[in-house]
Length: 612
Image (cartoon, rainbow, N blue to C red; front, side, top):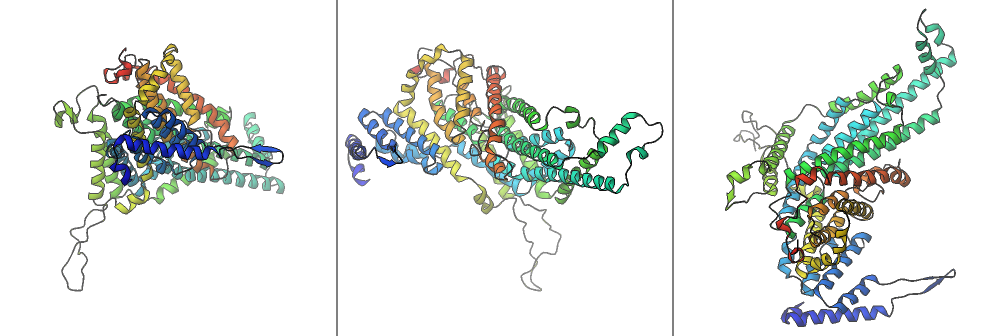
């Protein structure tokens, strides 16, 4: 490293190129390893090394940047290295390749978007720490009820709402045990009822015909006979397992769907925000909390409703009257009442609302209001009125959330008792009032904060900046110009479908990090508003419904052991298609007018879009 620093830039690049070429030529001799095994020949190639030799032979900064991106993509897809470790490669590669100065690369790893992510997670950690999210979830479930269809809807709605503000994984981990506790109680009550009735019939103590009142209508007799029919316990167990699978999938799917509704709900949304500010610095803050919510919240609601209908049909069948509780027997009513008591007892166990929960709820509401009113779009926001400097507001969404996060470390978690006697160091010593602990302490934050995601975000921003500095983005844009012959809605649909399939195999953050700069360059080359392809790419990266490894919420529910991979594939494949269609519809309806997608914006002009 010292030798390279003392050399001129050209000589340093030549030395690095010669090293890579020598390493590549050495490995090419052992590129194909043949191993005879049961009559088959197995070949193994050193992909990364061969691409290294390719980048050196081309010798341009574009090719060297492309090599870095491809190498990182392979590591992200295969997880040969931890995701965050792979994200640090630009710090080494870009300076050695002469693409960017090391200080400029490192500056990309802690930007405004990273601070927005950190602040949002600190608020979410506070909500989790004081169990406010559990109180909200149980309260909503008590309002919805426990009829099968409404119970499914209630759990999906609560999970989606919570995942808008806190981690999708934490939401799933909290909601799945509650859901299974309710379903187990429903199943237990049903088994006890059947056992009691069968025992009574066997002992001859129940006579359905004798219990009928004289002159009673025939339907009553039919209901009694129906309740006294022997029930196949195997069928009942299978029905319970099917509903449990549906509920598990409903929770993990709604956690992923709910995250798309807010800018801080899931990390790909923040990747888009950061990439927009990096690639298009003059975009006029087109993506902020208010504009994103106006676009993504209706999309989330529509997709959530479609997901509920799909899961309802495949796991509860077409018996709408029974699923909605329109025609239930007395035993069904007793079963529902017992399940309702389970949720009620869980809620009572939380006790009365504490002072800390009240303060956090007030701060949370204040945060959302400040986000919405900072730059609402249809009028001047408080940031423009109070903090305007030279026609530009210096306050961003990150400023607001960090301010609220600081208050969490300052405000007490209990009401200070100034009138109490206080604790003394020794008997007869002076009275001292012990200050209550703050709402949040750094040990809790440090334990729950996913610092690896902060580095992963920075790695994505460094890649985008390197692509721009090396000219790779411009080169890619010129190669993608034939796409302008395809209708715009078709481009949106095909790209959304591509991202939805790709994100099943790799991290959604890595997916958006890799694709967004390429799609932005493509949009500039064909004179298309970059948001028209970057928005659906971001939303589609959250459509990871088919595999347990696709996203952490899927892995959480799969770990309970009730689901098989085929169950997730069957339910998730249709949801992927519904999600892509919903996103395509959103992009060509309300998003089209909200972001003025029909016009090529001035902030997207570059050398490759000079003809637009």
